[in-house]
Length: 107
Image 1 (tube, rainbow, N blue to C red):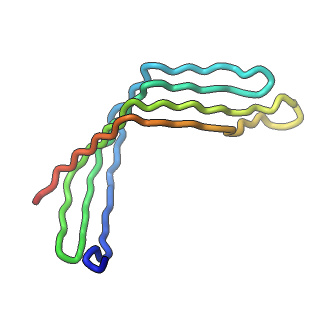
Image 2: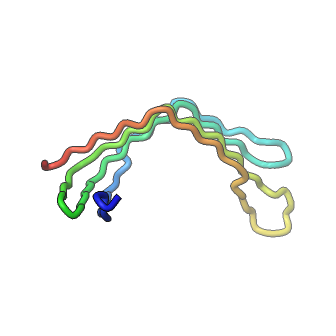
């Protein structure tokens, strides 16, 4: 494993360039909280990247596109009026279908 000596990989100037939520809903859970469901969402991110090893270095621009994302989140809200309103994150389930990564470098 000594061939794979330490390396440096960094990403910078990360920008979310597109978000699509074709199916999203919020519903009340009687007596307990709020349920958020997002279906078939997608996200596109652009960034700069660079890598440096003992024998190689490169940098460039990259795009990451994540699609077929499904999220179910439940938030609880206490029903008492004794203090400030609060929301607690109770549970979350997330799945993603496809991840497409494109890196454009100089070498």
